[in-house]
Amino acid sequence: MGNSINVSIDMTPLMERLESLERRLERANSHNSAWDSRPPLMSVKQTAEFLGVSESQVYVLSRRKGFPCTKEIGGLKVTTHMLKIWVERHTEWVEDNTNFFSENAM
Image (tube, rainbow, N blue to C red):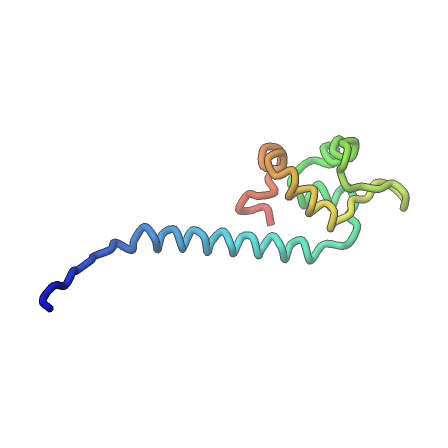
């Protein structure tokens, strides 16, 4: 009856981790709203600005198999919803070659 156990847990590391996850979620939501505000088709210039690369790099990307672009409607256009999927599938390349995921990108 007098057998009680007192347990003390330092919540600081857990709270720091939670705050870190909340910051990452806020950035992810920011990225989603940035996607949502884009037109369905982006020009080379819009795509370059959005990804944080040069326009010439967009032309290089357009020659890669699977890069979501079309020339059928007057010049090179990038399909926004497919670009999102492409970025998700090629995240390592995007992180290494663009500033898309940097804090100041959007």
